[in-house]
Length: 303
Image 1 (tube, rainbow, N blue to C red):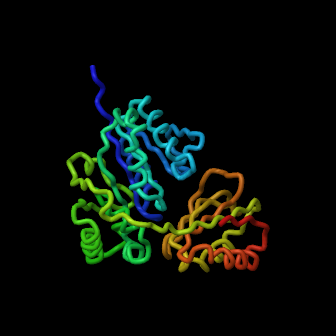
Image 2: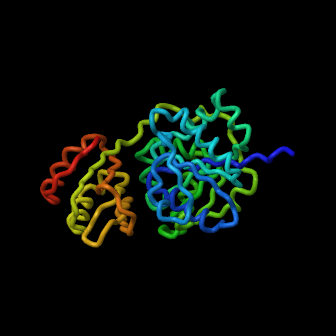
Image 3: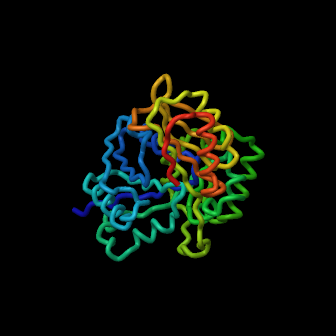
């Protein structure tokens, strides 16, 4: 008896759209389903969840070996016979590049086990209008999706929500649009047919990804000082994220726009803050100078 194909979805969205939260919600609300998730960057949030998490050697599809890593991950998934699989595409990654990796002739044997369904793009309702104006990748991701889900809809007015839908349809008239809060979109959205554009070239072009700058520190940090330091760079970043060892233990940090969230997290070998810069590597020098003034502890900056 021939086994049925495994539905395969790609989940994209610019930084801060809430992809990880959406995947966590899907896993929690569907305990009866065996759902596989392939992350393109470390899944820190899921390490504390009641899930089986396996780190593939060199498994990030952002790394130099991405052309081998993604098919290898799909082969591992297929062996587990899940009900469906999601590929979570980093907010800085090009979804077309992922599709081209999957479409390579050497990967046909792997994909024979999958039904490549749709690309879903999560949109950050609170920051979308600024992002679509300033970041070419946001428009590019929308252009190549089949379903756009406006996340954080609770943070905006009904009038703005209507404007967001209109803007999305200006970018991609063919995609379907839904909205949700806290990443809580339902699998029912995926149960019906969606419009598919066969052309990957219509919206393509040279996409310049924002630069990421990382600060590592092995010392315990003061919460108020770190928040004061972060506050100086909100206007020059699309997002600030990471984890820090504070007075009360380890905390996850997430900053999108003016919103700052802290939540307890698992321990790490060092504190790390990632700044996704609007001004490129020019942010490195002010980060170094303000860290020295406010935090006054040794750190390593990688840009």
